[in-house]
Structure formats: structure tokens, C-alpha cells
Length: 172
Ligand code: ZN
Image (cartoon, rainbow, N blue to C red):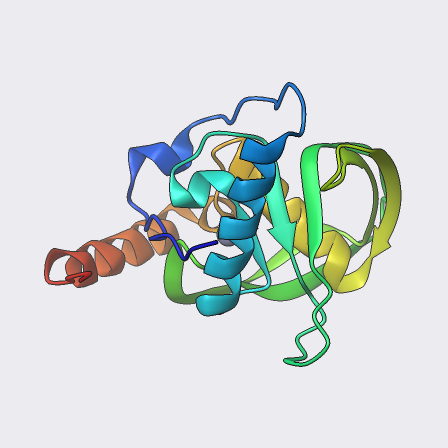
């Protein structure tokens, strides 16, 4: 298991649509292990494979936010089956959009079908933070970032800011 570099917006790869996984094997599990390590190290509560440059429909998540009680979740080929009409707002951030936050409105409940770490089909009814997190991460699979929901002006200001940081950032 290892920590991978996280792609930062603006980056063309982050806009790519990720491809479905044919089956969950050792390669996919190794990827999920690396993604989880990367997410915990960041630290963050969710990560999509494309954020470390792999265009596969895989998401990892842990919303427990407790150091000694980890509750990792793995979603392969997630599909939203149902969404609630009611919405909730969370102040969202993203590991690929560092230090930027904005209030985003999303359905407050969703039902998601996916394959788990062992490739077994699962159906999960999520609400609250979990529902928001799933939808945020699933947007990554479509090349969508949370800043895409903001006004053009606000979005371009954020991208400008990120580009400035990026030009003198070194990762060693
Ligand atoms: Zn994100």
C-alpha cells in the first residue's frame, strides 16, 4: 500500500469520464488500498480513483472521522438508483481543489448500487453526510468538480488562485 500524489485542478485528467471496472480482482483491491492510504494521509473523507490519475469507476470513503475507529467504504461501479427530492446543504471541499470551500445543495438521500471490496453487489441507502459524500465522489467519475456548481465568476476566481499556488509548488 502506498500514498499517491493527488491531482489538483486545473488538470485535464480530472475532467475525464471514468470507465466501469470489469471485475474486482487483486489489481483493483491494490488500487483501493492505495486510494485509502492516500485519502487518510491527505487527510480527506473520500477519494475517487481519477484523483490519483486512474480513470476507473472506483471510490473510497471513510466518514467516521475517528483516528482509532476506521470505517473504510469501497464503491466500485456505483450507480444511483434513487434520489430524494429534498435537498441539504454542506460546506464542501475537495482534495483536488485544496483550501477552497463552498456550500453545495444536493439531494439529502440517495440509494446507491455498487460492488464492494470483494466484488459483491451491494445496495446502500445513504443520507446526511454519507449521501453528500457519495454524490460528490460520483461526480468525479463524470469529470465534475464541486466548483462547477458555482457561478462562472466564482469558479474562475478559484481556478486562478489554484493555478497561482500550483506554479511554485513542488512535490518531492
Ligand atoms: Zn472531490
